[in-house]
Image 1: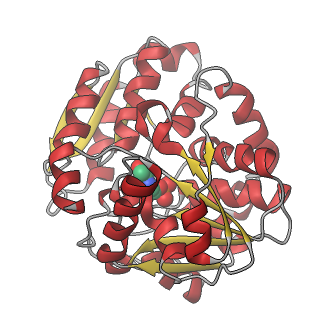
Image 2: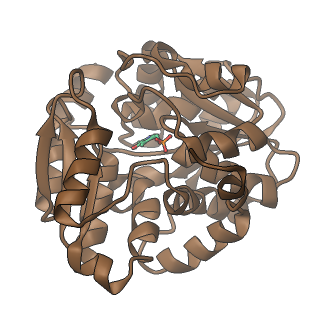
Length: 324
Ligand SMILES: *Cc1c(COP(=O)(O)O)cnc(C)c1O
């Protein structure tokens, strides 16, 4: 059990420290605008494009931040994690940049591109069945056997604070926001973003967006406790999580205003919009925030709205099938 003192330790100052650690290593990604998107919504939308981040998603920020805090002994033993994809690639790349070994536990049905990229960065991939096996358990066992440090994909203070640097950069670049829409899986990105937005743009409405098929975050925020669900059936493979992390929920509960959901069809429409109008390839999960604005799920008219476009890792064949 985590106690309240653990939770209270997560502060914006740690996002600022994370920004210093990743500086010059992570990309400062562009903030793009679209007159068409603004016309369709009647708002001013600012897209923070983490699909252009190293390894193709914001996850590099949290992974590199966490690994750069390792002691010499931890570096020698290496890092272990479980992930359905983007955190795996982020840990694998960060470990190779920092000269340490990485072992990644991945689901047997993870997108082929993500498995190939993870191996390409030099990590060892260990496959498990996400419907019958418990990855946390496998992770704990392997970490103990090998002496490796486990860095989970979202439920970790250094991961959360690293992820918060994207919204820190966004507000630094465009100024005060009325609302911020953030893709939500386990809550690393949302919790970090909330720490940054609450400190840098007070009064900004902070909204998490998750797939309709898995609204555990929405249920959790409304009920005041972490709600567990079955693995959701959605095209948003980066948000196929069964529950928010404990560290994540502690921040989300105190700093996030609302959590809304979008359908897979709305995600596909947003992918088409990004491809056709903004010439970018965004993976389904990366479209969660944008889909909420473009489909009127969140009222944005007349507002300045930040949208985190969280990643762009989707194989071409799958991308083509979805947008066709
Ligand atoms: C992991 C991921 C998310 C969800 O992030 P959490 O920190 O788990 O909430 C959203 N989009 C992409 C592209 C991701 O890889």
